[in-house]
Structures are given as structure tokens and as C-alpha cells.
Length: 212
Length: 256
Image 1 (cartoon, chains in turn green, purple):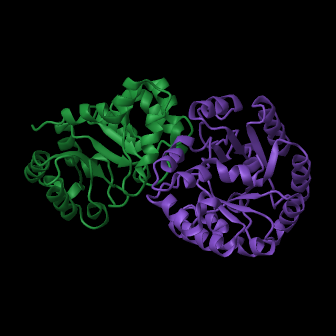
Image 2 (tube, chains in turn orange, blue; image 1 turned 180 degrees about the vertical axis):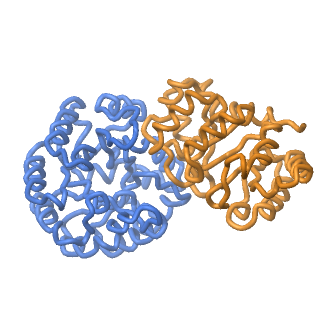
Image 3 (cartoon, helix red, strand yellow; image 1 turned 90 degrees about the vertical axis):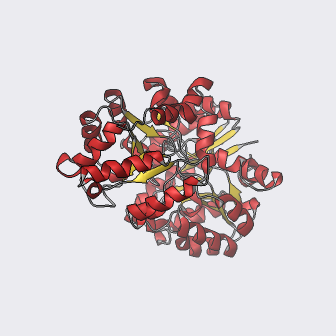
């Protein structure tokens, strides 16, 4: 599942358009579109936009509240979040883009919305005291794997919360994917747990995406 | 033989560690086929708890039957006390070098005269110095104190002391600076520890400075040793270069 850099660094609409064209020609690629609140000022237009994205192989939504200067709060993002929740379209957020309080609010307010927190290019494990408690409380919270690079972090999370809360990702091409691959393949967990993390959990989330 | 040349036992208070004990470390070493691990104890390095760090380092050496070896930490802010502990440590078989010098954490730039005594001692005792090295950071202003260029003066004045730039300069500009310094000073090495996962980093380092001056390291227990192990094992380099990086160079450098 890929995003286009231009969607974060230039213009989400332009980046998403390039993304759709790119994934259309590669059967193994799916899309993660970048969204911003103004896209949902008109519910009808946003519904149409989202339906088009999903129809053209987009399976995740990425939000960058800090980089794109918006609040996840209801007064700013309600229309967008409601539409995503309605479709069960998983939302991916970098931990550097939101507070853990906002993550709690998002997951608790929209329990049908899968929320995947990943590291971007900054280590996430400095915040493990926060996300351990959130994993315990919020069944719709997931963690992306590539930033969970602390010693035995994967084994510890699987031991406490099971393997269903981790989603494999590599951060390619910013990071060498062999790091995440080795973390998972050499983890001291069962083969079934490895397969859930490698693809099973994401398969389940993607299969849950629906059009209203 | 696989040698993890940059690791830590012990914890820091800022976050939770699943397991940073000597027992847990040994179990993971066995699982991954790591024969030796070289560590700077976190209590000593980051909290200046010299006695605790020394005692736990020695205990780990004994418990592991010599598989867990240690660096003796020098803190430039407490030069006399710190130097006493380093001298005492280097008399013990558990200790194979000085480090991790940490200009960023200790708030003292790498070129500062406060480091002169430890370079002198390392030369006298013929032991390598391991240091933290990093790029200039947008969000961590002290990282600039460990930029590779800053080590040039000491590295040049002490050609007999092997200096290992931990994390190979940390990020992009730091990697380039580490390469420049290693090309200029034949006594400068780099290690691969930390979250330095740029694609083709290992291939670039091998091409620019040669495999003989690159050491596998993890930054355990902060960073899982599997991360960089995977990068080394799957890198596009020769089998000979891979063996040098994974352990051959460390065996030679630390006389293991």
C-alpha cells in the first residue's frame, strides 16, 4: 500500500491523482490517499471523491494534521472522519502528527474506524507508555511495524495484546525494508502470529472497507 | 562469529524497556547467533552512575562467561572521577575500550579540550574509543555536538587510537561527514548501530571507506539487533565484506 510524496509535500489532490494513475498500472499496488478537512466541506462531493478512491484501489487514508495545519477535533474534521468511519476506511497517522490524547479521542469517538499509528521517520517507542495503555483500551487501534524498533518490542506487544494489533510496513523507500522484515521474520513468536502481522491483519482491515 | 559492537545494558527513565537485563540479552544473542556483544551500560553513560554501571558490566561479563564485554564511559563534565573509573575498568578483562563518548548527551562538543585526557589514556592503553556521532538535527539541537567533522582534530592527533563513529553519523549529512572523516583518517571506523536504515547505506559505506572499517552494531536495548542484522545480511556486498562487518573487524579491533 503506497502513497505519493506529492500528496504530503505539495498538494493532496494532485498527489492522490498521481497515486491513482500509478497504482492502476501495477496489480500489486494499492493506495493510501492523503485527505484534508476541506475536501469534506461538501458531503456530497466528498462522498463521491471517496467512492472514486475506493473504486480505484485506495484502501487506506492518511492524515497529516500537523504538516497540513488542521485539527482532528470534531469542529474541524467531523465531516471527514464521519465519512471515513462510515466506510470503515482505515486511517493512518504518524505519531509525530498528533497527540496521544487526540488518538484516544479519535478511536473512542469512532470505534468502527480502524486507526493505524506509525512512526514516519522518527522512533515511536519513546512513547510506549502511552501506546501500551491505548492498545489495552482501544480495540480499533493498530500500530505500524517499521518504527517499533526497540529491543524485543514486537514480542512484548504480542505477548500482552496478541498479534492482531500490529500491521507490517517498511517505510520504503525512506528506510531499508530489510529492517522490518528481519524484525518480524526473526521474532520469537509463532508462525501464525508472524503471518497475521505480515499480511493477515491488513487483509482483514482492507476486506472491511465498504461503500455506503 | 557475529559481534554486536554497540549495545547497552540497563534502562533510562524516559520510557519502558521490555527487557534490558543481561539474562534477556544473552537469550536474544543465542536466538540470533550473536557470539559477543560490546556494551556501554546506560546507568553509567546516561546517568553518571559509575559504580552501578561498572558493577553490572562486570556481572554481565561473568554471567555470560565472557560473551558480554563492555566499554568504560568517560564523561567530560566529571573528568577526574570519570577517568578514575575508566582506568580501573581497563584493568579488568570485561572492558575492551572507552565509550560511548557522547558529546550530545553530555553537552560537550567532540572537539573540546575536556576530552584530551581520555584520548591520551586510550593511546597509552592501546584501546579503541567508541563515540556517538550524528547529523545536525531539526528537533534535537545537541546532536550537532557529535557531528563527525568535530572529531577530526583528535583523530588526526592520535593516529594510533581507533575511533569508532557510532551510528556512522546518524543521518544523511552525518553519513557523508563520517565517510569524509574515515577517508581522511585511517584510524576512523563507523558502526551501523541505531535507527539508521537508509537504503544502500551499507553498500555506500563499503564502496567509500571499505568493509574493513565498518562494524555491525545494534544499539540494543534501545534498538533491536534484528533490524540492522537484516540490513547487513540482505545488503548487496560480497560474502567476505559481510563477514568482516558482522564480526571479523571487531575481533581484530578488540582482540577478541
